[in-house]
Image (cartoon, rainbow, N blue to C red):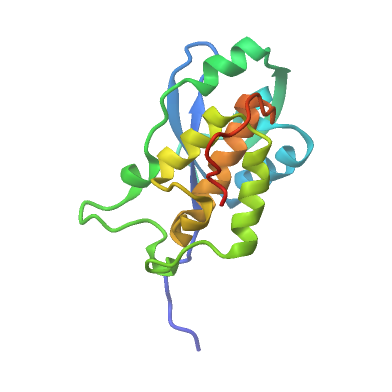
Length: 181
């Protein structure tokens, strides 16, 4: 006989910009919505499209479902506008008042990124202009990618994807100092 426990659930929070008002809101959804988003991401770049989110059911009803449909492709100007919007700090928003970090159960203390992952990040950054590389180094407080803390790897990979979307993977200048060494 199994003891009765609360059923565990996964909730995922996203920064979502409203198309009409350019206002950034936090959208919290469950695993089904997240899987649907991953499916769409495999076919379309999320930062290049506007999407319609349609609710089927009442607000706050546990049986409510959502449809995520691509509405139209954004122009480069619209993409730049949305990229410039300030985002909510979701980690700060969802961490408890006691200051517990989200995801802290699996963080490695003071360990640096493994060489294979560092090399993958380096290869991605090498396709970008120096300005993007400098922003990466500044954001993560490192002068070399191999000094990146292991606890920051996932955030770094997401940030590199955002830089690639913003800069289009074009290296416009030669590096004076090699931050990859």
